[in-house]
Length: 443
View 1 (cartoon, rainbow, N blue to C red):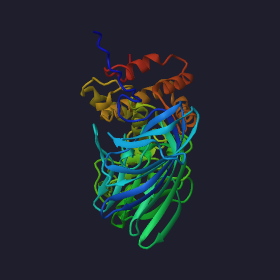
View 2 (cartoon, rainbow, N blue to C red; view 1 turned 120 degrees about the horizontal axis):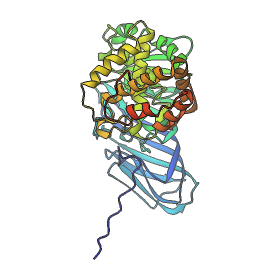
View 3 (tube, helix red, strand yellow; view 1 turned 90 degrees about the horizontal axis):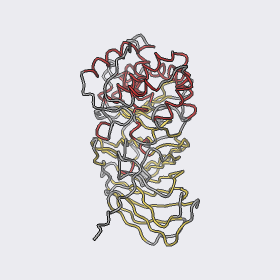
View 4 (cartoon, helix red, strand yellow; view 1 turned 90 degrees about the vertical axis):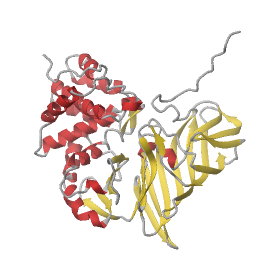
């Protein structure tokens, strides 16, 4: 008797095999949410505009099991059935939709949101002492709305959130309306730029909002009043960073500008969202001790948020570039040169385990510091190889050509080949595809 081998379910990304969905492409999310901070209760409706990529009778959306679904419609009709299981919303239609058909999916849902437990710790919707933050990377979006929670799936957003009036609600994009009624305030944000789900955020707290710069890119700070004095000193040079990065990397990619949120709680690390960076109270110490992190998070608006890896194995295209931006800021603001930083970290990496392939580090090492530093070193070696003029022309071409798109490592190495008279293959082989750390000064 021949044993039939069970066919394994198809996987979009082996780093997060349970995340992502097949059969359709989302172009827009419209969220109408109500949130009660005092009891951590979220209710709302998600309207998802999509198109089928193949004939479709059933499909799934990513959604945390902490949230229950009360009603679903597809193109105005109730489906044959829907159910939630394993952080998925499973929907079966009454009739098959042909390939290329428009879908409007409306999901009414609610519950007590909580973070998603992952290989990298808790991610997603998280309660603060008084308020909320969403740290979506890499698969935390499903903790607060039904979605196709994968970086290659970019869409536009309208985010409407109603919360108790003392709280400020911050989400991605431009605040297009705010109205108060009966002790509750409704905030509406519009984000037209195609954005990955993990970069969509919700920040709620007892915050004030302040303008940081009056010309160029609009920049704002959202933070508790008690931290304002230290913030003014710690983040004073951020407008200069923006000016430098626009010069080196090209036009800032988000029309609504850039907002820094500082929570009233301490955070282990800051994090990026589309057009927003989130820092903890501990990052405001009045000593500018976190300035490199301020540069890092700002650089992600180009590298990671606008130009986004299609699969998580290519994460060096986010973190290596943002880390190198730290060195570029240092070099251009009176600190150590990028070359001095490169030599410093090369020495440290030489003493670390050399079992990581930068272009495919594996899920456990996806956020390993070696990815950040070796990625930055790779860019520094490339810069020395092709010269400053070609290197920064390459970066500007990269951010322009793939603006609000998704990329893989081969896209970058292919584009870089146009900026060098010699083959760059030995450089890529040594730095991206080999575990051994190459010398910084090849003989």
